[in-house]
Image (cartoon, rainbow over the protein chains, first blue to last red):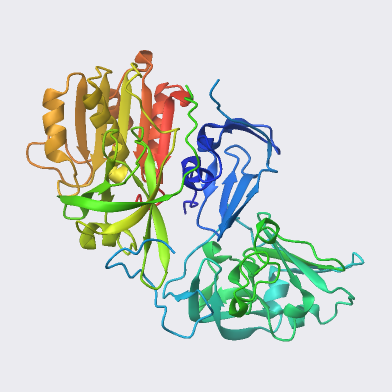
Length: 88
Length: 198
Length: 250
């Protein structure tokens, strides 16, 4: 039975409403195991009341986002940091 | 409201007596915040922990030996689908809590895989919840929460924790996985309590 | 190499169907007009939202099939059994109908004509769509970046873009197209039906020493299998970009 996750690419639409740059290209460090990877490489569970991105190495949650009417909630506590590509 | 697409009606009936904002579905969507836990029945246990740290524990055979009920209920997911007439078999929380001494008002359900959800203790008792291990005449499938899940049909279905492994009885309320990120702390579908502040 | 572009936050925009053409019995391409469409990079996708008269709405993601251009984009949609959005887009929507679009999204799985290295494109089923955008972008830009496309599909009926791929294989300099049928092949196909395997990747793909960038797109199982073959063959994992369409590949 395949677990139904998709690429971090799936975060791009919802996070694109929040961030002004492409967050799938941002690098993040997992708070649990330290693995550094692009958000686009995370495993995203999107058949849920929100988007849950999990570390490609240890599967702990790195990021969560809920989109409600007129608001969104963003949880980044699963990341030690996010390195965002910015123009010079 | 978004731009209407001519000729689009979507799946699911919206004309029957449903909680506000819901549509009726005939299938049973599988939602999950993470990988399906694979739990060995030899290792499986369900633990009720009280606010004083006392534990009552059942292994799989012990759970299956308890008096069980078969119930048919309607379920409502916060993602807007509702399913009528779902049949489950399991042990009532009244049975599991029968010998448990507690002054707690709150409960936090915990699952294999790390998922949590919170609700008032009074919403677990008096015939309002079960630890269910059979659905629609068969053993509960892992993708739907098997070996056993919590079933609390009067609240939005995210409260019916899949792969349940225990309940912590608490003097203070602790928000679970979705409650801590915008979802309503109580979650009554008939009052459309989906998000904080609803 | 990450291109840092300040995109501005995404919002839902109204898209109007300009026209549509059938690609196969179950797939259709829709050309959409979107005022103020900022353009896109080859490989990106959009989220499409449909709303019913009573306010019920649902959304799905679809890859952009066209080469980058302003104002208009093309999506190719494969009808999914028991789907909710794809049957509408494939069978119901016609010129003048509207939906909402959010995007373009996805910077990870993109190709830009300024990239000169060899490229391997491996498509499983509807995974051909974003890769077709790359093939079309390459032609539109006059790029000579060496491209090899391997497209795995079940039967001649499930094949999309057939005529265009034949024409491009013939006319686009530096592009090679291989179609691998997995269940049933047309009489003129040189190889018996079979899954895209390590041997075919070696024969129709790029040698490891060429250091190609590999784009693999399709159902999850296809992507995992092909990506593993590429890694086993010695391709560096960081040169392999994947886009999984989920278990059904829809």
